[in-house]
Amino acid sequence: MKQKSFFINSVFCVLFFLFSSYGVASCEMEFLTPMISPSSAPESPLHSSLNVLTADNGMESPSEIRAPMLQKEIPVKAKSAIPGSEQLNLDGRQALSSHLVDSTAIFKPAGDELNDKPLATIHDKNLGELSGVAPASGRDEYWGHNDKGNDPEIYRFNLRGEILQKVVLKNVKNDDWEAIERDGDGNLIIGAFGDNNEKRDEYRLYSFPEPGRSVKKIDHFQIFRFVYSDRKSHNCEAFFICGRKLYLVTKEKKKKDHPILFCIQKFDDNAMNIAEEIGTFNITGKVTDAAYSSDNQILALMTYSGIALYRVQTAAGFLFNLIKYVPTDFNQCEGLCLDGDSLIISNESGDLWKYSMDFFLE
Image (cartoon, rainbow, N blue to C red):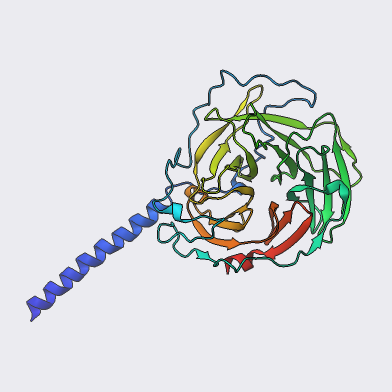
């Protein structure tokens, strides 16, 4: 009996050691990928070393451009999404089964769309095609702009639907403005990268400090030109900032296509900037805006019929760690931003919604 007992205890100790070692190794592997943290960056991605032009400068041809060799934090390209991910179609509201990195993803069934009445509506013909939204410095105040074909103006508004301020960008056109962001230094960045026909040779970002309440026009701002590393034209309506890097999410032509994630890792003076391809998302659908929260480590992607939430605890989380999808029915939403613990949604008609992040993450 003593020998038998000794043998059993020995086997138990060996098994315990093996499982403990496996657990430690798993944890170590999980955190080998560097954490992405905006707070680790000492300066804004667009105000360190940048390709700066004046508003009336001409544009050079992007021919003979070579993409710089950049160290990737995320695999260069996920040529195919997680096996079986074609089952997930945001616009079709079909659930991806066990292939998600985080199997706790919650998908609301069709017919259970988020379609609450708007909190407010902007009734102002000057802002008749609201295409982007970003937090302003004032409480419950936001910046927005119109889509292509409208004047080069941004508007400050509140959640009562009131226009508080109009600011004109001088000597520049609204060359298909699709999104607006606010960086860590309080600068506003406009993404002029819409390209429905996918024929543009290059794209632009406009950056300037947030205007004071008395400002009516901006004469001086920075223009940053960029092209995509695959030397192709892409339609894009969504971008977000993480650390000192700017990420762009393409809007594909077909609902079944997977959006592509590109990253401008740094901006060089007197050179065309390169948006490096990072990979494809494990979802399908036409992405119309995106927002990232460093506090919640959440990336939100919006399509015409839903919002997908990714948990970004490692760099790969941008592409694969889908934790929840919420169908929506808000009539062509194209504006999304994260403001503290709130998620703000807007559509082209000027309707505004505000939700607590707890609502989406419960």
